[in-house]
Length: 244
Length: 280
Image (cartoon, rainbow over all chains, first blue to last red; front, side, top):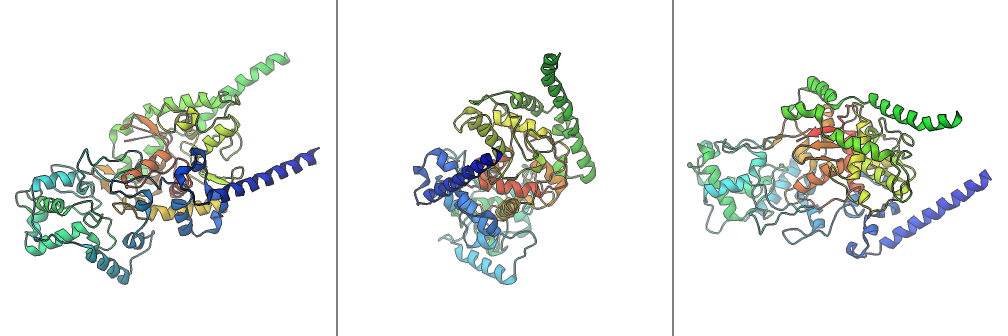
């Protein structure tokens, strides 16, 4: 009796295994996720592959793009989708340094060159905008968040996120992931060279600081040239609270 | 006589189960020791929160979870007392500090959230569309009540997720890659904010994954969040971080979420869990 039961259990387990494998091959027909019922979407296709046999990098890519873990079709404010947000460009790939990994000089040069090539300058030259507008842009962290609570850009202007990581004027509390920029213009003046450098750092900071944590606000299109000019005024205008 | 004994048995069991919670250490005491040991600005950033920890509203949520756990429910009219969280059916003491872990019955690495859902389906017969399972967030959800109760049985115990099974290692290692992987509108990875000491986003001090005695507080979920007025889970923390990072939604209980949680739990190995915690 006991033996029979365990045989039956083994048969059941084997059948189940076949069902799982069968279920998996059925999901890899290239059908878009949206066509599937909710339950099928949630069911991982993972059983078809052996996680333990994959390299950590290969498994990470699999989990992100193939395992049904992310809402890859979720729309974004820029008209792309979740998949695009998770897909790495050259700089992101090169700069995903693991603990203890360092940037070689050659890679540093490559990243800086890529960054410099991405910069587009204003046709009428780099000028300072309105520091008051720049102050609000520097403070606002609104924009480009999607997921369960997407930022509606039609209802509210997007910001530059500067205060999240930098201390600027001392009337508001800034973060310290980036260096303090209090007195930025007072220290540097506003020569054409300083204007150009500041514009380039905001547009694509990897030009000077390869693999920096700072976002590429101009290169990614988060900030327009006019918005960069306004933030530059906040940093460099002698009348700005940053320089008081 | 015999009948009387039978009737008394469940009562005796219930009493001993309640008395059993003495093994877990009060979260405020665990935190106090960590603060004395490290003086970490992340741990000390909110004196108000430290002050109200003994009155953490999460305890009320845990109490409701304790009742739910023992109550026969669902189409199968069963309680969760036979649910195996990795240390044997019904064993909750120290179970949460050893999650995520590999479960042979599902062939998957599971975290507290997904293992709980698994038991609610298999033992109680709930389905994905039942409110008991569908509602994943908020102090009023069954999932959060149960998670808070189960996790509270691991207070003060050291994080010790098993790494013996190849799947456990694979998920932890993939989670590590994901932690350092930059993408999205702002090029953020988890490591942008969580690999240095004393860093802040505006006024909020960030936890450093390289400091287990600090990191343990960051990963001690469920925790009551004062700014949300709700108890939140590890899965909810993943969700909120990824939203700020400009990533798309990650699905609750998905393998990617569990890989991240595996890595971040491993990083706190050896440090005592603060459960339930209270955070900003």
